[in-house]
Every structure is written in C-alpha cells, then in structure tokens.
Image (tube, helix red, strand yellow):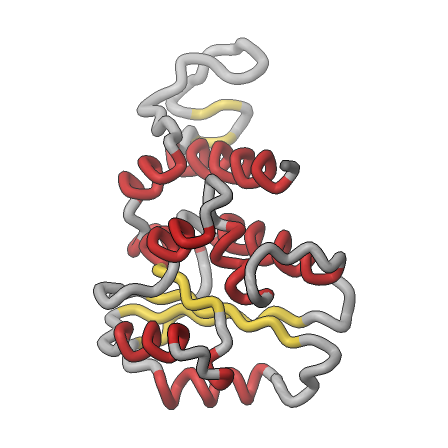
Length: 197
C-alpha cells in the first residue's frame, strides 16, 4: 500500500464490553471509527489482511460500496454482496468474546498513530490484548462456522499432491497437510472472485 495509508491492528480475547462497542458503531460515534470484527470468524492473518488490502485499494480508487473504509473491511470479508449480512456474520455483536480491531490512517488523519490508537483501545476495550498472529487465530477461530459461511469444504486428508505424487506421512512437497491451510486457500479464492465482480 502507498505510504499515505497505514493499517493498525489489535486483537483481544475475553472481551466483556462488546455490546458497548457495537452501540458506539451504530450511533456513528466518530471516536469509534474502526473495523470491529468478531475474531472467531477469522481463520488467519492472511484472511483479514486480504480484506483490509481490498478495502484500502477500493478506498484509493474511490470504489467503496459502504460508508467508510472500516465498514468496507468488514464487507470485504463477506462471500456475497450483502452488506447487512456481512456485519451480522463478521462484525462485532453482543456475544463477541474475541475481537479483532483494524484502523486505517490516511494522509488526511496524521493524528492517528499507533500510540493514539493503542491508547484509545486500551481505554475502551475491556479484554486481554494478544498478538495478532495465526497461533492466536487457531485458538479462537470457529472453523465450522467459517466453513459454513463460505460454503467451503474442509478436507480431512489428501491422497495425492498437485503433482500427482502420493502424500507420504501427511506431507506433500515438504509441507505437512493442513486442512485449515486448505480452507484458507478456498476462502481467499472466494474473496478474490467476489472482488472481481
């Protein structure tokens, strides 16, 4: 992304005030202009960063389909073009316990820095901050719910690799077979295809 856009990301577990955060979004409180995402609906860092990249690219090319870049990130996670459904499935809800927060800073918002975002979030989110990494997503992702939303298959094993060679001891080309990795590829493909329409 161009230097005039910066992406700030934070992840929280055991969130106790998700309904407050949702109320701030619904009220249009400018201080809470973030992409608040239910982390249980995210499979990996690539999953959410693909949505953020697409939203930022749409912002730069003046192609946003929602009201701002943060709502566009949530919308870009959706497998279809229904904005309301995207927020119901991926956005923060009253029952959200694990939360992913994204904030995009633009050249017109130089006062939005990592420090200011971190301070604001730590003041208003009642939860435990954790690292934004795949290991934490593995702990909180609701894989079955994600699979259903994307109508994707979750393979249980692979009998041969792409090259047609059999998989030996669960590996293919040196990579251990991982059904989550396979699901991630399907989801990223679906997101890319939806973005092309």
